[in-house]
Image (cartoon, rainbow, N blue to C red; front, side, top):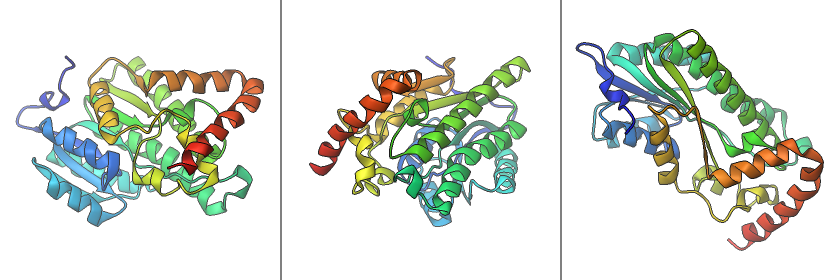
Length: 273
């Protein structure tokens, strides 16, 4: 059994967990799971009302705060507020955006927003967390798309690849500095959330449906909770899909032929939904 970070607390202090993008979906479910472990939750979302609704639905103590993850000063404000409540032992960078389109058709706003939220949001959040955490885990929710080429999701995949690279490097640096703060990277396949359903009508979303099924939110949360407190720096869900993604990255000539063929299968499944 992994040690429960909620028990790693200073004298007279409660254990605090911060979750970004917790107004709905995976973030809200992660907040509920961490609350069940005994953490005081700091629930954040760019939609302050959604964050408040999540906080009010939790069984344990919770504080809601609006947070635009593109703003580094806003992250620091959340970190200071969380540290004032107790020992921050878990910080989850979950907020993300998804857009699908041929890479050359993406608008300037889509390009900027994708990298500012998916990459810089993780960077800013990790930095703010490390500033206030004495021990514990920073969990960055990344994606299998960060492991290899994802046609139709070039921006999304690139933003997640950068977030994953940063997370892994930061974890190594913290270990070398003998700081007991671990960076954990969770890379799930496509999850059945509104983020996916909002783009499912687009032909460019075909690659989302190339797996045997979409993951449930509960599956992702279970994997995340198993990763927190463990010695594993990274987890992919499911592992076999991760292997395919890595193969595409290491054999780009083959991927140029094979991936579009696989995408055709996904398009048929998308249309049959």
